Amino acid sequence: MSKRLIMHIDLDAFFASIEQRDHPEYQGRPLVVGAKPGRRGVVATCSYEARRYGVRSAMPISEAARRLPAETVYLRPDINRYGEVSHQIMSALQNLSPVVEKVSVDEAFLDITGMERLIGDAESIGHKAKQLIHDQVGLTASVGIGPNRLIAKLASDYQKPDGLTVVKADQVEAFLSPLPLTVLRGLGTKSAPILQRLGLRTVADVRRLSLLELRRQLGNLAGTNIYQQARGIASDSVNDQSTRKSISKETTFGQDITDPAILRESLRWSAQEVGYVARQEQRKGSLVTLKIRFRGFDTHTRNRRLATPTSADQVIFKTAWELYQNDPWGNQPVRLIGVGISGWDDAIDEEEKQPDLFGDPQPETDARQDRLYQTLDEVSGKFGRHAIRLGSKRANSKAGSGSE
DNA sequence: TCTGGGGTCCTAGGACCC
DNA sequence: TCTGGGGTCCTAGGACCC
Image 1 (cartoon, rainbow, N blue to C red):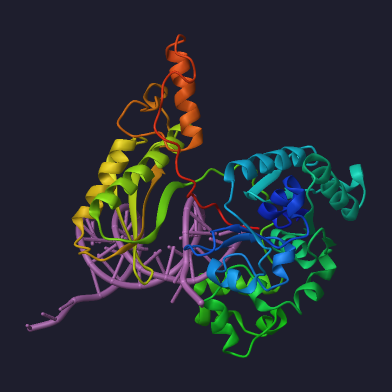
Image 2: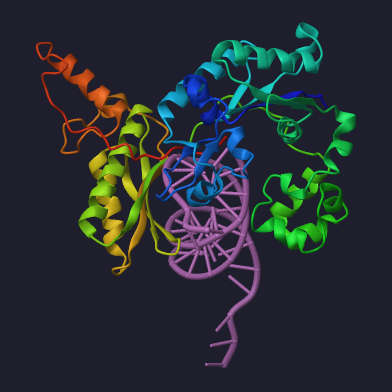
């Protein structure tokens, strides 16, 4: 069996750090990226200055605002900008190892097996990664190195920010034992309490349970998984090419909505976004899923399989709207509505992938708008870029993907 | 404290078939 | 007047992660 060496890289307070880097006046101040105070929403990421007040990712913005002082900076996420920085980082990491798995905008696994001969010991490789990132984008990252993904990930969490932790194979048990059991992947708000009610607190405690007992408590699959994780057993493969399986767009309203016309327009808008991304990625899906959330977080999904896979805004929208109308939801106030597609047909036929730019949908995203300008320029060279006035820019109301 | 958005994966029940 | 036993596919819900 080959011994692998896995590195996990986690950018420190990624969104907040980018904002502080780009706005020196924000440095040293509590800063929250996420919803605006007084509105619905949560903290996506906050600076370390804000964390000192107990504020965390996913905390409702109302509570964060209650805890934070007046000088706190609140910003809406600028996903496109963060995405660019992320891309720069991932590219830089490619110089270190060809096997880079991007887990999210601010996290990656690298397979660094065999690199010790080239660079030096694990610590040296970790420093090198941090240096690369700092040189490239001027941000700090926390790095963990271990014999598999679980250990690497927990190691990167061990010292933050700007940390570097190496856990060797013979140190795994000692490293894991004192950690709270909630560090294990898959023990969240429902299953962690099941084990805690049994008096378990640490990973070492979990290790005292038999496989049979863990399976009884958590189910066969989850039980087996936790049993293994508690012993440091986890995947050590790094997958540099993973394709996404669905594309979706959803909107939480500032206030619950009862007017069907608004729901319809929102769904149309979501469908346009989904269709646009699908076409950009040259994908067609045959499963359209409507998602709806009522007051009280009562959430439902409905889906329908199409005879022909699609990436057309109109088809996605019509299907979603029919799914909405098919169910007698009544006049319940709607908190969220959205749509997604999945079920790719894999084979993409080249002729069919033209964007449906000239349907009734208005351009909504900057990217879409740019694309539309670009296309119009191509189509007709005599129109200047500003000669044609297009739909209004989308309101600045899009929340971002959250992570730190 | 009243809970974003974009994802992945698992489970349970029913339909359907042999 | 009892109603097996798989296997597979589909749908909806939900846990979890970043």
